Image (tube, rainbow, N blue to C red):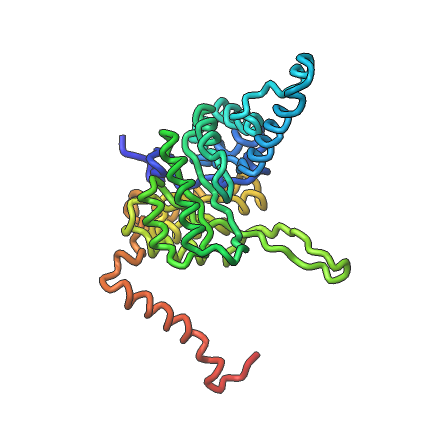
Length: 342
């Protein structure tokens, strides 16, 4: 039997399509919604993130309670927490993984989110034992300490990746922000540290200012079409130059969006905002549209399409990149050629 035309691979996992539900609490936090996502065409689900800061706080509280009353009467020992400290802060998340495994036949990917070295190893081992198919490390950081160099921060993140990859037999993907001095070099280092894939890109939520109340406020604005440009560019630059699988994340909503990412070399695409806007049925619409596009353009599988417009396919990649820049700049030449502005 020939493989399905949308069949894809991500982190060594065989997927029925490149459509993966990205990490978002409203999507993966509701057990009743997970079967709908699979029914509508999700090839895998990334669960919402477990934040390592929460584990660290719980660990410190456990140690604090262990010390309180240590020189008191024996009866005081009954007030000490009985929970194994390795699993403090993990219980709810592990329950979500187990519930997802019971109701889904598609891969379930755990997401660990943190900045500094901590209990990454314990958390990774716990989610692996709970049945996760893979782990997505979300290295979300906004560096503000002027005394620390970029190389210091990267070394810290690489240590985290090595620790997790060495601790578990599961494939590990790293979800990055785009703001690295040399992203291509750092990606190569992540591969050497044991990562199997990259998710490009993490989206930083920016604060806003209320000029009436004089307060900062957090306002979640869903990603849109403009957010596709960075992953499109970098996946195209990295495809074929690394052994890592590449996943696109950010503003993807239609079959055409997915096709573009596959053309530059994405193994899979993650959808979040489109599902929050339009519901699980958007997965079916994108999947049907992708199948139709392949048929209309004479492609028998996604493998025939993937990477056809990556920079590695260009005989002179540097000249190709330079030409793109000059073409983009030249597209606004009409603003200075005497043509009246509207």
